[in-house]
Length: 478
Ligand SMILES: Cc1cc2nc3c(=O)[nH]c(=O)nc-3n(C[C@H](O)[C@H](O)[C@H](O)COP(=O)(O)OP(=O)(O)OC[C@H]3O[C@@H](n4cnc5c(N)ncnc54)[C@H](O)[C@@H]3O)c2cc1C
Image (tube, rainbow, N blue to C red):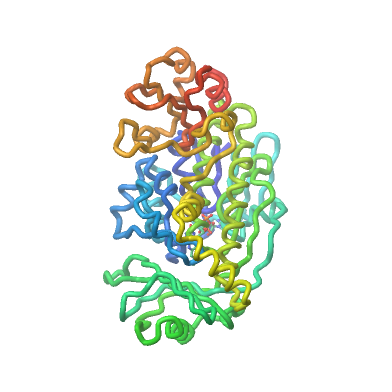
C-alpha cells in the first residue's frame, strides 16, 4: 500500500477529512486535479455545528483569526430566523469557502500533509485488499480505502456507476460576488411580483472594501446555465428590488446555478466512500452544501481511523451510510421546500404565494423558528443509535453547558472517544479501552456520558454502565 486512505478532491470535504485522519494518526494522501487552489468564494455561510466541529479540533480560533467574519442569522427560504439569535455558543457566521480552504490547506501543509495537485483521477479498481487509483499521465496510488470528495461532477461516482437518483435542474438562479454602493440593504427581499434578491456579507477585497454575495431570481430570470451573467442583468435585479437605493460598483464573479437535486443511493461501495457534493447536490439555499460535506467528513474520519488501526467493530464503516444518507436526504428535502416557498423558478403561481404567506406567518412563532434552526444549524441532528429510544441525549451532539466544567471542544481535540465519569465509577471498565477512549473525572454535577470522536453522545448514564456502548462503538477491549 502507498497509503491507508486516498482522498480524491481537496475542497472543504476532502481537507476536513484529511485533518480528521491526521488527528486519528492514519496515513492519507489528498489529491486534486487543479494545479492551484480555486479562488472562487463559493459558500459563504458556516453553521453552528460546523464551527463546533472545527472547534473540537482546535481549528476555529485560528480560522477566525485569518479575517473579519461577521456573525449573522440563518434564514429559511429568505425568512430570517431572528428569534434564534443567541441560541448557540457559536452563531451562524459568514466565512467564505475560499478562506476555509486556504486555512485548511495551510494547516495541513504545516503538519506535513501537502495536497498533491495536478493529480486528476481517471480510473480506479478495487479488490479484497485495497483500491488502485490511476491518474492522468499514468501515475498510480494503491490504498486501503478511497474517499471520493471530488464534488458534484464526481469522477469516482461515474467510475463506480453509482446510482445518483433525484431530479434534473429545471431552472437557474444567479449567484454573484459584488461590491455595492448606496444604502444598507435588507438581507432578503421578496417582491409581490415574484422577484427576490438575497444580499450577504462576503468579507473584503484585497483593498479592504466590503464584498457582498448576491443571489437573485424570479419570473423571466431563469436562463440556460451557459448564458453569461451580465452586469446589466445584476443592475436590473437590484433596481427591481431596491430602486435607486443601491448601485453596482463592481461585478467580480457570477454564475447561474441550477436547482438539480440528487443524492447517491449508497455512500459506501466496498472500499470506496462518497462524501460532500460527490454524494449530494442541491441548490445552495440556507448554507448547507459545504456544511453537510464537512459533517460527512467528521462522521467518516474516525471510523476509517478505527478500521485502519484494526479496532473497528463489525459494521462500523457501514454506519457512515446509515447515519449520513438520511441527513443528506433531509437537506435535499428542506432545500426543495425552500426553493418552492421562494418561488425560485419564478412561476408567480398564486398557490405558491399563498403558501409562502401562510408559512411566513407561522415563522413568527418561536417554536417554528427553533425547529428550522435545529435543522439548518446541525445542532438538532440526532443519529439513530442503540439506546436512543430510552435516553434523550443519545445520538445528539454532546451538550455544551456553556462555561461549565465540561468543555467538549477541548476534550475532543485528541480525536479519541471521551468517557465522562463524574463519580469516578468506571475506571476499571474504561481501562479496557484506554488506548481509544479518554476517561475524564473532573466533571462534578454532570451526567456520566460516552462521546464518540465526532462529538456525538453514544451512551448516557444508564444503570448498566458504558461497557456495551464501548464495545459497540470502540470494538473489542484490548
Ligand atoms: C454560489 C454558491 C454558494 C454556495 N453557498 C453555500 C453556503 O453558504 N453554505 C454551504 O454550506 N454551501 C454553499 N455552497 C455549496 C458549496 O460550495 C459546496 O457544497 C462545496 O464546495 C462542496 O465541497 P466538496 O469539498 O464536497 O466539493 P468541491 O468543493 O466541489 O471540491 C471538489 C474538489 O475535487 C476536485 N476534483 C474533481 N474531480 C477530480 C478528479 N477526477 N481528480 C482529482 N480531483 C478532482 C476539484 O478540483 C475540487 O477541488 C455554495 C455553492 C455555490 C456555487
